[in-house]
Image 1 (cartoon, rainbow, N blue to C red):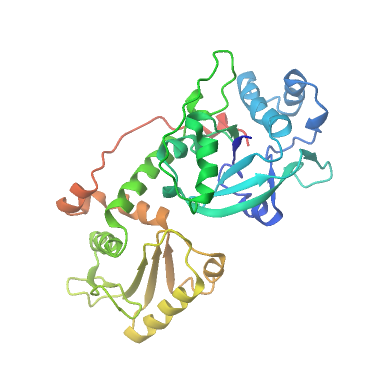
Image 2 (cartoon, rainbow, N blue to C red):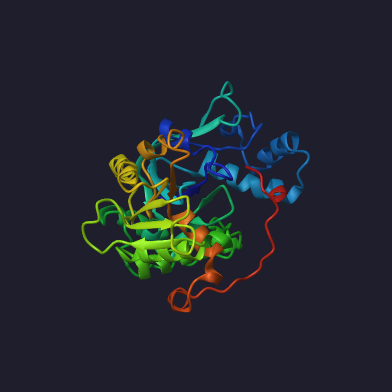
Length: 350
């Protein structure tokens, strides 16, 4: 058995289709050819040359490895990890052989059926080395390094949390084609850094302490704040408003949840009710683990009243005001700005 990474597009734009249909797709646009009938990689290269004449040869070679793996190397019983735009991970088991549908809408010609074992697993539940492998720029690759497949399978029995088992490091033969992106160096360094920042923040500010971090961010953004005492708060964690005394507008009522699972709709309804009780103009609902679809569906209706921060949003706001935070907090969460060459989207094909 194997563990595969299969992205749902560069920006996870096909994620909903993957989840709702119980399928993973090969999302290369315009590739309306039955890959199952190709005898070898040379035949695939000939097809790619016809379909994508605008790409350089080394790009087609790189893409051919991913495409060949999807059509010919994946197998029933293998597991697949699909990163989410919500910065979580979906894990599924491949249940079907490669299928080609020439009448499908572009780019959904190629698919395999999957049974989703768990959706929206927090990235912080995974060991960092596995996250590094899942942070590959490539769309499809096998995750081999550090016994990753066995360790992810063990997570299922452990409530989808890392087991802290020492990995068995398998030697990769010199003539074996690299399949894990950590062997080729094609890593999303920005995502890896964000994963490390998320792990640090959660280790320091889990539980009620997350309210302290949210309050510090709002204060750095220019708000005067009041944080409720721990315990029963009636749906109020933080009150915030502009101006020195906090008498300005908008008046914001903030509810903070540090749970690592997506938040359900009743908490949103409670926040809206509390906003009315305290005379708040707007509300901010913060949940480290993100939000269930029942919450996200309410966003259009509440656009002028409520904002949602998941882990990604919280980190974005944290980084934006990091230099304005007090020294004690920055000492708790020490970061250093670095610069790196940006990957060109022209060098990627999905």
